[in-house]
Image (tube, rainbow, N blue to C red; front, side):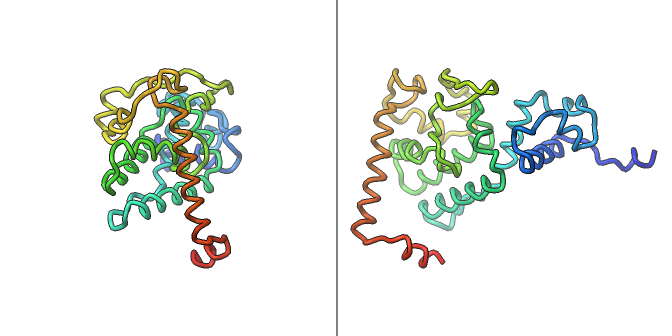
Length: 238
């Protein structure tokens, strides 16, 4: 009776934190409702009072770890603010190496991911970027903005629960999402669209690819002109 009275109540937050800890320790492949219930000392059915299924569990786990990314710094210029947040996202992924695959596996970004991306666009806009330029910059950065290197907007790279590539384009943002994340909605309509794109009514893939390549090449040329070396950069960072 005493053990029952003093047992920690099962909550959604406790379940999500335990799921994150399990994935951190054993990998995302070890995550199951049965294993999670065992770690929590409950029967598997008890979990379903707080999470409907494994998909909802994964969404919640993603939101937990994305919530670890540092908030924007209003006292910095856009470049330093965005860079610090990307590096913070990178550190989050180092703590949770399962997260990139989990993020990429979702058919739609979670609320925390959308909130984070929306805030990055807000920083760009506040830094003087036009809606059009912010749109293409987000494409160029891709999933680097979340700390890893995959194409953030390429639906053909998303892998579902079955392990097969999901080629279906994402649906248009519902009205409640566009209201909640106005900066993402703004850039979504900023550029000419290409019906042949892998994202359906999304963006011109060839243009976005060339834009990113040109951006990288311009930056590389600038470094070449400066006589950049990794040793010099490392000493300055230290």
